[in-house]
Length: 397
Image 1 (tube, rainbow, N blue to C red):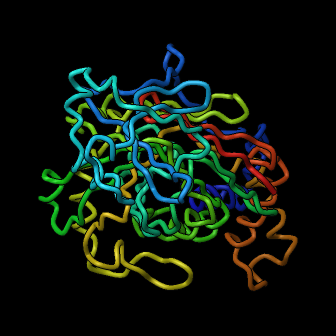
Image 2 (cartoon, rainbow, N blue to C red):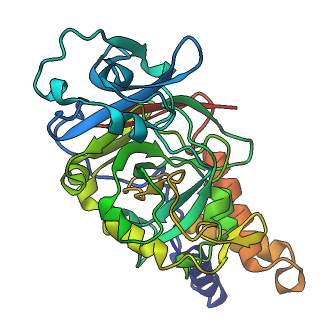
């Protein structure tokens, strides 16, 4: 998020010095521009020699099953239940895979095993099982420029993972924004940064919806690393949709670098980036997280919390990559600034309780709501990836 305070301060200075005539109201941008690859996104499965693609579902008895995915088409995936390959019956996909022998698949000799075909909308979330995750801000250079941020920062995000076919509510008066991200989870609790290398890593696609009102009202634009506003803005109901696949790569760094992630809204392209564009890779993000776990410095629901409550990165938590350019939020326009100044003066200016910034925030949010360019009921948000499947979210009221 760009420095809203600075924009409003500049606008007030211009008016106060009699130079407000240079402000010319321009059309509000509908969302931030983004660059897109020339080749349209094609979804496929990662080659088995590069990565194992897993998906989970409930069987007729309600038991969680884990399959190794061999094909996907027409809204369904086909694969082999890991139990048929010696895998254990467990909710933990890492445990199921660790006990399975997939050598016959690698050798192309599993033709005699029966396969299962499951609709994508019946698959379970690929995200980790907990409700505390580590979010990341401005970890892609173009988005950092959009947000006027000079560094990568982290914050706790709360809420369970939801499925790849889901809904999110656009509550009245809320500026609802989208973000597509890459996510990673681990087969064990990480108690030190050094355990990153030995842990089995699962990569999946995720979304990160944002209540921009909370950021506008709470964030410190001059110190985004303070974490103010981010936990509150990103911890809403169903704000964490996850893709259909958990992908276990043989070379995590090479795999993540090549993974592509995109966003479209009602078929209009909004975001397009590769993992190689991350400023800090996942190993570096783990190091960064462990350097900031001691103090409960992150504001959430009027109190302060730690990045994780245990001082570790538990296997129940997800580590998020941050998003690329192309989100909806843009800073106040010149028209917003002039209107805020007029509203402030009309309210009594310095003689009233509300500060200029309080009035300016209300004016800006009201104007953004009136523009209706944030997510609206009926919108369809689609996050896609070359190897991680896709997420389709319907916005409802």
